[in-house]
Length: 159
Image (cartoon, rainbow, N blue to C red; front, side, top):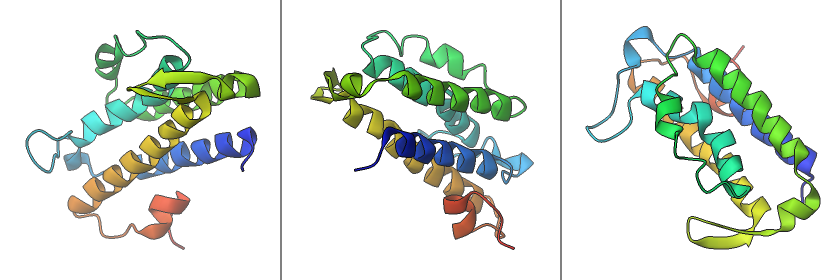
């Protein structure tokens, strides 16, 4: 078992890697989407910008947490992503720090599944990892050849 502090540190590591990967996106790649019907690079960033805090709010019982999600996403641009995502990162930490062990163990129902709230919150970490990988692949698909494993898992450049 990991502690809540270790979980938060893991979540913040993933957000840090996403911010690092953002710096690797070529200027021409923000409109890139592999196929019609998939998110563009910018749309992926817009999703990442608010999914963490919105989901925590939802898992804490706010059934309407996602109601303004699309409107919030539209406020994110390539110019303000890092600022917006850094604020999101700090709010994720704040919200998770505030949750008690008892709250994390309370049963919650989300997306048709009833389980301890901690398992639902764990899904946010999985989403960050999954969409981080998608962002990495979008960057690679746009011809960036000087990034690799250390960038996507360590959040830094190879020496």
